[in-house]
Image (cartoon, rainbow, N blue to C red):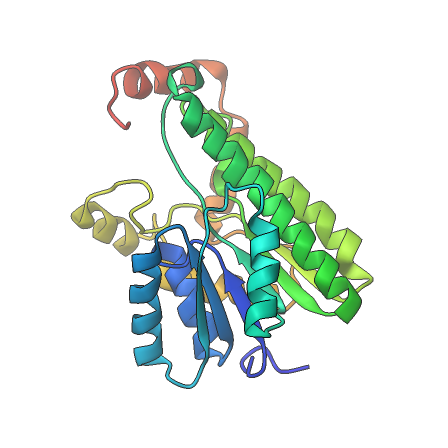
Length: 270
């Protein structure tokens, strides 16, 4: 078994790998000398990502596979790709996800389906496929991306929070199921991260990072990968986020309705 700082000879699959936290997961794994299989729905972005990673980490192998993770045959295609390239990944990072702030009744059918297919079906099927492979090898790591919002049933976040809650519960259960086989499953539940997911202007992101309201994707990726390699069940970044979980949990209904009336109904933060 290699040390956590040296993953030479290992190979990781990273979904949603072409930007934001996904790209930083790739960089952190590459820094530890881990080969990569990077996936995204956009083939052009994958080529750009591979070129950028290869320039900074010329000693690792980088494979690209364009996949729509909402397709029903995604695990069959991933299995076929691994067989074709003769690789045996032992790390899976389920990072791909979407976000929107809108009432369920006003969310288009296709967006609702995408939340479920991407956060529930794809995470489940890829984790199951990977766990089945690594169960025989009796080693491996899975890192699934949930969110701090999984503890936050707030108006406007129903689809995002509910599907991220599924990821957390599923991952925690899978952790215990796979423990006897040497396969570790970690779920990361980040609070605010300074990426483009939430659509914040650059100046506000910079300010939020400066006052520690947001974490940088580089810092988050480094710590999340570290927790995964050490076999932790769950990672929540920052003391402020842990406090926020408690605070939101005890938030009374009138306050939640104020959020709806003042922010959601008026479209301030959509």
